[in-house]
Length: 236
Image (cartoon, rainbow, N blue to C red; front, side, top):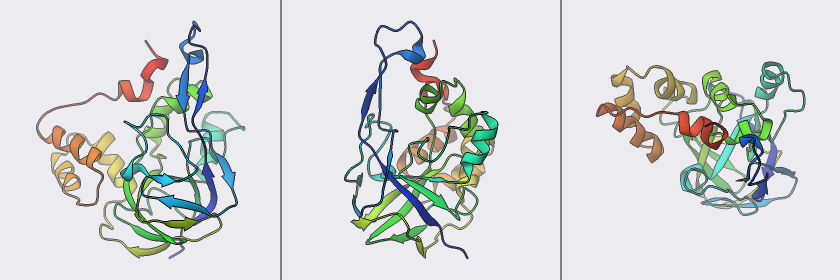
């Protein structure tokens, strides 16, 4: 099996953009940590992420189960065509790791990898929010990401250490080979009536708590809307 390869490592600080008094919601004040820059250095990876990285919204981003955001490099060919936007490329999603030889069909919940000195473990698919839409001024961009299945995923950090670009990820353990990122996205976003699958996924020990919580609410008959997440302050 070809190993995932870290083509780029990216980090960034929080930026404050826009005008609080702008009439167009897309131009209003917002904060984001999604603008990342490539680094060729060895960077310390702690349990909350890379030491040189920041997130703006600590409630919905970052934390132990979203410590590292990975995104397949090849997806940008799709987005350039779909959005008719040649300028979109590596780093546009706010990823920390731009990966080759990995996608949502080959990465599974609980996959545990050696990454430099660190050990990282797949915790959940990414659920895109309204900020990529604001960045590229495409109102439904988050929905397009979600519906395309090209979401990327998050790692938790099991062992801290230095890591860098240009390394392969060595698979140490794969406890849930049937729960690929693609399969998780299907359960969460498309096959919402399949409660058996929701129960099975929610029972996956290494799935992030936020995903378990959403699925358990579904099992109790409580539905949730994605409107606030995907449109946020961009839309009335």
